[in-house]
Amino acid sequence: MTGMGGFPVPGFSKYPPTQDDLQMVRKFMQRFARTDLWISDGLYSNTSRLLAINLSATPGLEFSGGALKVKIKASAGVLIGADGLYVDTAVVPSLTSFNDHSARHENGGADEISIAGLSGLAGDAQTPTAHASSHNAGGADAMAIDAVAGTGSLRTLGTASTAACAGNDARLSDARTPTSHASSHNAGGGDALAIDAVAGTGSLRTLGTASTAACAGNDSRLSDARTPTAHATSHQNGGSDEISVAGLSGLLADGQTPLTHTHAVGDIASLTAGVLLGRTNASGGVGQEITPGAGLAMSGQTLQAKDAMTVLLATADQDVVNAQNQDSTYFTFSVTAAKRYLVEVEMAISGDNTTGDFEWRFAVAAGTMNGGGTTQSLNATLGVQNIAITAAAAANTADLACGVSANLEAPQAVRALFAFVPSNTTTFKLQFGNNSAAAGRTSRIMQGSIVRYKQMN
Image (cartoon, rainbow, N blue to C red; front, side):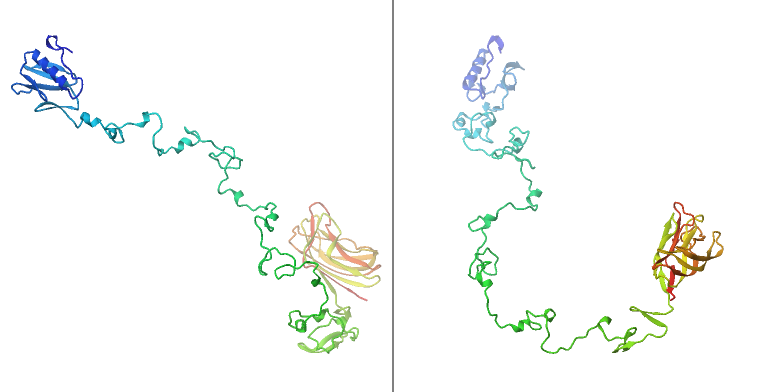
């Protein structure tokens, strides 16, 4: 930059300005008839009037208001004071401060150096900053995952040969059969069991005669003859090895008072045939024979009235579906050839169809029978009917039809009285079913119905 008259305007080469810079300004001022300037630590006139000085972004000289103004490049280190220009040593230190200035480049120093831009290795070991994520999968410095067994690496959790087992894996605690390892428990094994421990402690045992050894299976002491020591009391009543006479044969040397006991009737050989055995009073007393009265008779072990009838009872309902003349489950009994029999019937019957109604009859399983009787029941219109029952050298009587109300739970009464003589020793039975059989039609003899019979001669 040039000033008036083409003289170059001085500029300062560094801050703060040097003595050379200030001398140049002085020569510049003398060029323009200002010979009263002198230089010390600033620019002065001989009249001690400080030249006007401005700090500016653009250095140079200018005349303004009849005064010469020196424009010095603005700097934090150049200040204007009452004595002229001066350098702020708090901002621009003296050269001596640079002789030993490592602290300026250290952490927090005035001219701190960042190692981020430096190459080479630091002289001292460094504590790394947090960088774990850089070693994870996908990180900038990712580590290997699930490497072969002999190589350290990150491991996933699973069942693969290169994966790690989870801490709660069921395989770590499930029951399993141990592999063969018996030899490890033998003498000298890796998990050897004790041998010949004291008597109260379980252990492996050698074979021998020592107090802690086991006896061999063929040891002669196990089978040699010897006289037992006295031990009779152990076999007596309450002894440790009590003997029960129940397992002994022969007669005891001393007579015994029998305990309270009972005998089956068959054990008493002196009873008279056809009599009963009783006591002289209800709570005890002496046993005695009881002769049945004239109206009673013994049959085997059964006492019954001579004219009594045997009762057959239907203990449950019995149904016949779409069939006729089926054997009753409950009303059958044995008969003897040529004997006379009297039969009474009291039945509760029902059916679920008025067309099918109900039918019944008497029959013998073998041979024939001769006899007759009568029955009273309801007819198809539910009116009263009395029907004769006959068998003339026949295996069965005629079918006897009865009316029903088409309701299996509505009973109808049937009564009958019949006497007969069978030709064979066989089974006498009552049969029943549908009067008109068809699919789905049910006839029933109800629970509680009875048949009474007796042999008459």
